[in-house]
Length: 237
Image (cartoon, rainbow, N blue to C red):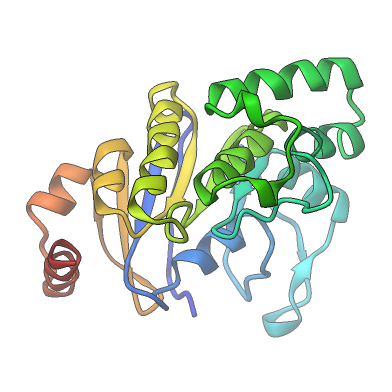
């Protein structure tokens, strides 16, 4: 359960959410994308507040068109890839721009192939997800998110399902996106990734923000005992 959490991701910023399992990181990310309904508080996208109806457990977005519009501008990359098994990689990347945004097929295909090249799997366009490694599937999921031309990217533990070698393939792509100035919210267990790419790091504990600040402060000079303990365990692992 999240309580009293307030964060801001400004255009071009990378905000990383860290903390132990159950601390509320993924829940917060899902609330940002309106995949979960919050019982109170406000969510603003480009200064526009989400409109709600009801209260408490019965609260839900009041304007489904607004929800759709916000979601099309906030592309989410999941831990488990969530690629369509019956579609080729290229078809996976093209699906949402074609059928959600109703964009021109030739334009979408050109963009999709460019993005697959960008994430280093251009040669996998015509294969199916099951024929790819986990790292390749996650890079395909990133290309799929980028093909929607979102204003921000939301990453939910993008490397936690991968072994260390494949993890680095995905980390390189995320670092390149950060260098481009992409707006990103990243839930991650990888402290090196958070330290390298973030403008701001938020440490969550028991559904609250225990500590936050620039990465050099959070990782090199933590103030709270709980954060110090968390980082010592992370480094030991």
